Image 1 (cartoon, one colour):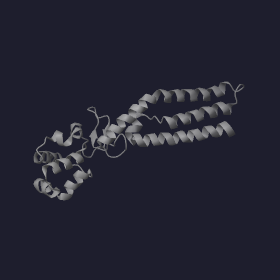
Image 2 (tube, rainbow, N blue to C red; image 1 turned 45 degrees about the vertical axis):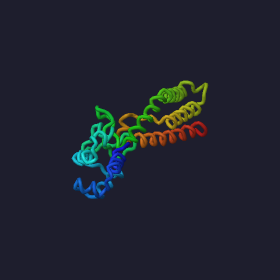
Image 3 (tube, one colour; image 1 turned 90 degrees about the vertical axis):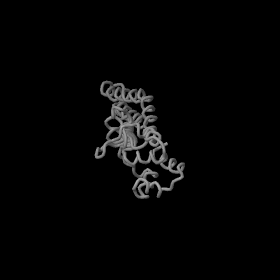
Image 4 (spheres, rainbow, N blue to C red; image 1 turned 90 degrees about the horizontal axis):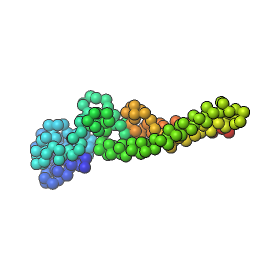
Amino acid sequence: MSLPENIREARLQAGLSQEQVAEALEVSRQAVSRWERGASRPSTANLVALATLFHRSVEQLTGRYASSPQVEEGTKRICDRCGRRAVFYGDPGRESAFCSEDCRAAYGREMAGIQKHLKWFWAGVIAACVLMVGGSFFKAVFPANCTVGGGMALLGATLVLFPFCTPQTYAKLGLRRASILGRVLGCAVELYGLYILFWG
């Protein structure tokens, strides 16, 4: 479970109201409510106080969320999946960062899918390049608009089906935005390729 769910569950199991928790920690009831909704995150001192109040360890209260290195305050790091502000790093090397456990899990599934289909991405790119370059060498056999247009259409279709981007693009935009951008560019290339194929 996520940190907000763990805080709420622990409070209910302890039989305490939000007001009682707020009074024990010397914070406002609204702060406790925000923690339970996930709108904000308690400070480290408040996490320790919550764990003590609920008779749990910090690890039990926070789960995997606390076991990952936290993104330092003031660091401009975005979630590798959705592009929102990252809260914790997904690995000890601090190469990937996420805003929630849901994003980390979804990112893992999506990256596994990308790795699985990477061979088709490269096959499509290579075939498209061969068609386009081949058009300039075999003008007498095939009309240039057929080979170049067909190659560009294939390249566009490849980008739409497999919107693979560089890791730097994922880190800058997040996986979802980078995939959308890849598909939009793929559609533009596809349309241009079809234009060359039929009217070029």
